[in-house]
Image 1 (cartoon, rainbow, N blue to C red):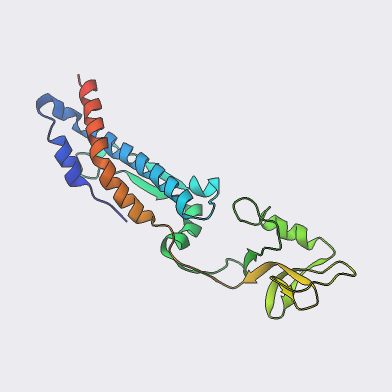
Image 2 (image 1 turned 90 degrees about the vertical axis):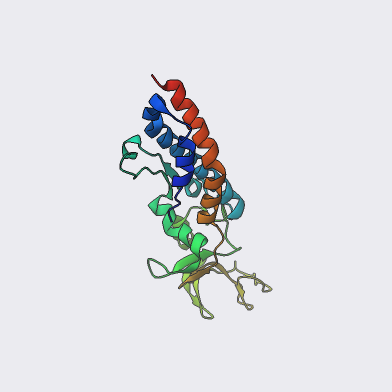
Amino acid sequence: MQISVKSDVDKALKSMRGLQRKQMPFAAALGLSMTAKKVAKVEQRMMVRELDRPTPFTIKGVRWQGASKNDFKTGRLHSRVYLMPTQAEYLRFQIEGGTRTPKGTAIAVPTSNVKLNRYGNLAGGQGRIKRLLAKKNVFQGTIGGVAGVWQRPKRGKRSRGGSGTIGQSGLKLLVAYESSTQYQPRFDFYGIAQRSVRTTIGKEMDKAIARALRSAK
């Protein structure tokens, strides 16, 4: 999605006259760059508010790129706020919704029977599954039509049932293997950017022009 603010920039630059006009490319590029920086920070704050415990890696996936004054004369002057490719690959489901399918054979979804980290993810990532399977009482298979990583009860113990258990066998489902996962849009990345640009561009352009005029020779 692209957000055009040409009219906002043109309106702000009208205050520059005469010899000051040579500073217009610098002022316009600076104003757009600082706007992008502010918008990126807003996106990160809203990500923490709207998503369930996003990791620092996810939050840092929001980046911004400043404008170059060299593009002023060509009419291609622009700045941008974007997501890094790795983070964008999974965040697009939070932004747009849809069906996520696995890269491999299945998506590993941890249950409440296994320890999660403070971000709600499987502690230790995929390596944790290998460590779980290294235990004698843990195995991988399909029980009652549910594929995943299962834990056998200790000798002499049987579960009374409950979430993640199968009948009186005492088996606990630690990690479920799902063929797909459905997502509903939760993070309005584009809407946040659009609203933030509209409330930021005017202030940042005014500050950029003031700085350009101070540095004019």
